[in-house]
Amino acid sequence: MSPRVLEYKGQEKHIIQLGGLVRELPIIQVSNDIWIASNADLILGDIEFIQTAADLLSEKIKKYAPEIIVTPEAKAIAFAYEVAKKLGHKKLVIARKSVKAYMRDYLLEECSSITTKGRQVLLFVKEDVEKISNKKVCILDDVVSTGGTITALEKLVRKAGGEVICKATIWIEGPWYTGELVYLDELPVFVKQQEG
Image 1 (cartoon, rainbow, N blue to C red):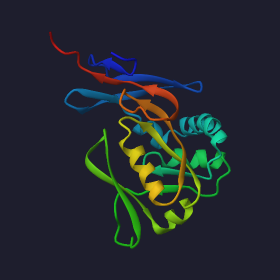
Image 2: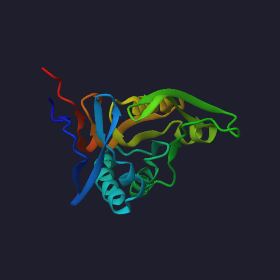
Image 3: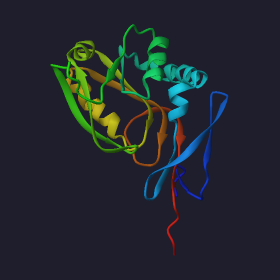
């Protein structure tokens, strides 16, 4: 097994360390034979962790000189806000995951994710497209597993006329994504050892 794939032996927690912080992540089952360390509670509400991760990642991506940060709705929003603020940006763009009645003019891209059942969409409304057009863009998410979301975001940014100059995340998870990526740490996926 690779360092990013570990045997699942019924463990309930996975310990991470980042920037001097230590946290426990619950291990949850996402398919018949795959478990992941869920960062949902951490990235949605641990302000100390979000600020620490934003400090570390903004230092790594500032050399690319992005003009705007693009992130998917909803888990990574607070994190993207902190990174954009640390880079001195006045705005960021959040790719929505559903079409609302008030949305008249938008760009849309389909994608899939290891933690979401079925296909999902990502979209920019007209105002988002205007913020991205002719800009150097950093696509930012909290975790990249298969790369489905970040790849769809890259296509969407290009449709909007932006130039993707870097893709960044706190964690890369599992062995699937092989594209260029700026990240802080790795999260393993857990699988049951095959019998025999």
